[in-house]
Structure formats: structure tokens, C-alpha cells
Image (tube, rainbow, N blue to C red; front, side, top):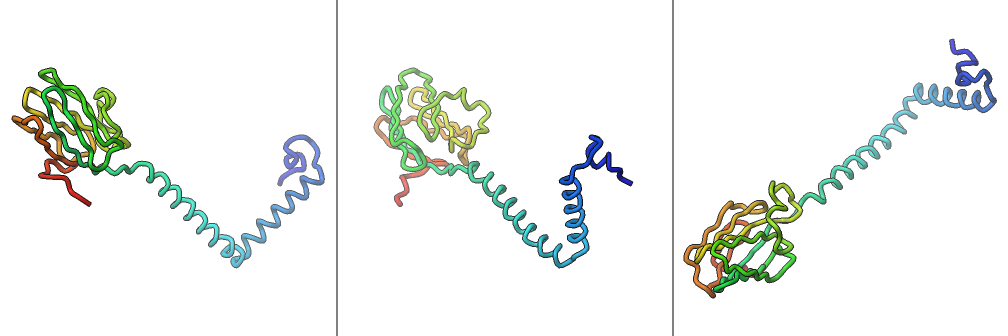
Length: 178
């Protein structure tokens, strides 16, 4: 049996508000638990509200994770630089970087040129794609870190002024027009 002292939280007295609150909650619980129509009337909408909230949370958490990795690039080497042109999938249209050294490497993502140390693990999917290009004399190679269906593309004995094309799936003959 609950004593008056216990209901008051150990303070030694009970106010009228405590008694009314206790009676109201007790009556609600008895009425709610013993009335199956009332229980069903409240349970069904509560269940649907719960499902809607959960589905919105699950869908909302997924929307920021997907980044479209499709891209299409072309490159045109000259004696001392590589010119890249993005047809689709980039925030840039053209990139040119100097490559006069014998073994020149440059990292590229959907936002432009970047530093390859920023992507050591290749786990960040928000950049769309991340590739590095290396020029060694007349050979140009591309290595994909993330966002491609290929690991390595090689172009051997590349002539200056000749345009070559590739996309997220590999080498292509010419750009696709929409």
C-alpha cells in the first residue's frame, strides 16, 4: 500500500494538486486500458504517425549520401601542359596544368585540380570522382581512386594536339551528345 508520505515524494505532505493529478492519471489509465474501442482509436493513428516519422528519417538520411559519379572528360596534351575538358559531371569546363617534368602527376576531382594526399583512403563519395593523371614523356595514364568503373587507363605515345576521351566507364571514341 502506498502511503501519503510516498505520494508526496517524501516531503511529508500532499497538496490538492498531487491528489487531483494522481486521480486523473489513474482514471485515464483505467479507462484507456479497459476500453478496447478507445485503445484502437488511439493506437492506429499513433502507429501510422510512427511509421511516417521513421520513413521520413530513413529517406532523409539517404539523400545526402548519393552523388552522381557519371562524368565525361577529354584531354589534349601539348609539349608542356595537359588540357582537360569536362563534357559532363564536373563543376568545371576546362583545366590546364603544366606538365613539363618527365614524371608529372596531378589529382583531379569534380571540382577541379586537388592534392592527392587529401584522398588517401578514397572513402569520400561526395566528390563524385577522384582521379590522378601522370605524364611520362609521351605516355599519359589515369588512375581512378573513387567514382569510376575502371582502375587504370593508359594512353601510350600520345601525340600533341590529339584529343582523347574517357568517362566513368573507361575509354570512349568521342563524346556522347545529348
